[in-house]
Image (cartoon, rainbow, N blue to C red; front, top):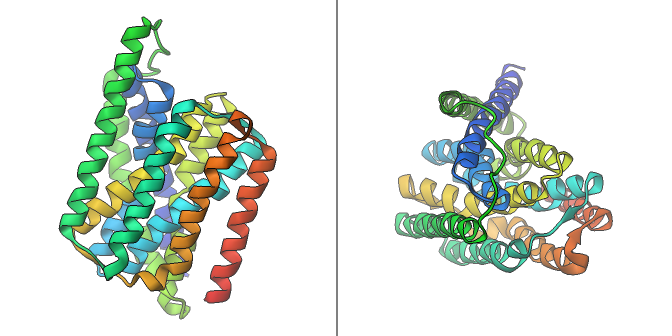
Length: 312
């Protein structure tokens, strides 16, 4: 019972911390005159992926590489299937051309590169450094491109930040502190539960931990869709997947090389690659992701969970 309470308590603190961090980060980003899509792909996606970052970092440092990798792979599957599917079942999303032509390919290439480099059963520090460098280049290019386009178009004043700058910075600090403590509790509770139930850490990583740490993406994307900010909603999920791979796996392996057999994650990696691949034709058809596409994505996730449970 105590392990369950620790896990749930950690999850609550994670969500609250992520919410505070995202609010502060979005306010700061709006001051920088960045487009909604880029805000979603960068600030919001990194903010909502912070739980995955801290959970994977702590798991890797504690020698639980399976939870570190399973958390990232499972979160990417959850983001593109369950969360996006649920969002568009409620609020269909029009697809920005850049999301289809630029940011989806980056997500797909990152996924394939991760699958390839994990082939030797070891994700080394230099491979992690490569991933972090690629992430910095990608984010830097997006911000530069967005600001350049804004200046070229002579864009009007964007939505004003909701809080004074000191409050935005305070929200960031409080959010980071909450995420750090919540992640520690969540990892400790999840590992203890998995061991007491005789369930593999891999199964816990790709289901309970992945869904739990993806709750900020779910809440943020639903709120963005409800407010008709579809660019933030879709950008958040694609950006989170890119950040999960390049940022979380990259930083985690730089600190502590990750050692897992790719074959033990065959089903999960294939589900991640197939769900990412499936997203492109769904975005391409009609220029929007609507309810029937959402039903397909949710069905894909349900099928994946059934296979995972059968695998044990």
